[in-house]
Amino acid sequence: MNALLFTTTRCPKCPAFKEFVGENISFPVTILDETMAEFSDEIANYGVANAPTIIVFGEDGEEVFRGTETYELGEFLKNI
Image (cartoon, rainbow, N blue to C red; front, side, top):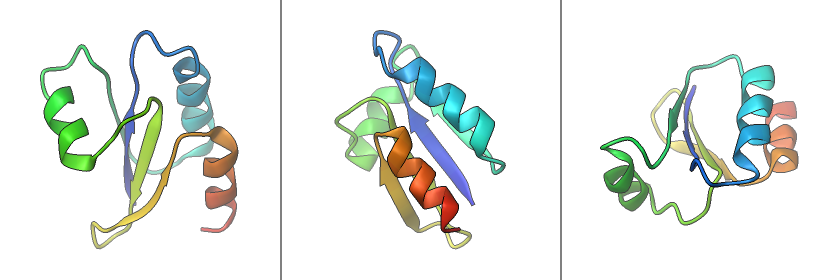
């Protein structure tokens, strides 16, 4: 598994979400924010409209989870 985490520097929820991810996910997570050159292309590619958004991919590269709230991510992580 691996994940993409979309954040922005102006997002009030993003710091806590990033902390939750860091404390609860053991697989690789790439964090993207609007200061990165590839950010616009990646949000368009994945259809991301809100920050924070995490997309988790399974071993086959298919999306297995997408969420914007820590409680959603927590529930997903309990079931994997």
